[in-house]
Length: 166
Image 1 (cartoon, one colour):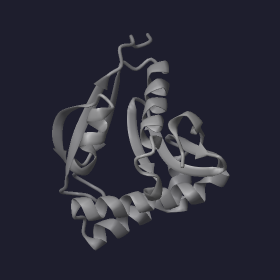
Image 2 (tube, helix red, strand yellow):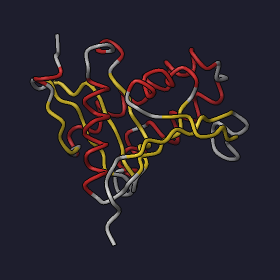
Image 3 (cartoon, helix red, strand yellow):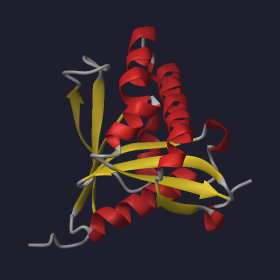
C-alpha cells in the first residue's frame, strides 16, 4: 500500500505514457459511471483525450506529472498555466493520498510560476475532493464543444496567496 510520504511526484516521461493513458481512460470510465455519460460520450473522451496518441499530443501543451510509488505509476495530473486540467488516480489506489499529493505538487508548480490562483473544471462526483483541497466553487458552465457538449462543469478556484510576477 502506498502512503503519501513514499509517493514521488515527477514529470511524465515518454515511457510513462501507456500507463498514464490507462489511468486517464479508467478515470473517464469512473466518471461515466458516476456522472451518467452516454456510451458515445465515453468513447469520444477516450478517443480524443485518453488514448496514448492524445496523451503524447497533450504533453506538448500541458505539463504532466505522475505519482510514482516504487516503480508503479499510480496517478497523473496535467497543468496548463494556472489550470489543473487533469487529475486521475489508478482506481485500485483511490484513498491512499495519491490525488492529494498530485494536487499539492500542481499547486506548488502553479504558485512557483507566479500565479495567484489555481482553477479547474470539475464534475459533481469530484467536488468534495477538491473542496477538501481548499477549492471553492465559483460558477457553473455548460460545455459548448467536445465530447461533453451540453454537460455542466463546476468551475472551482483557490487563491494561492502569492503575488503574480510582473
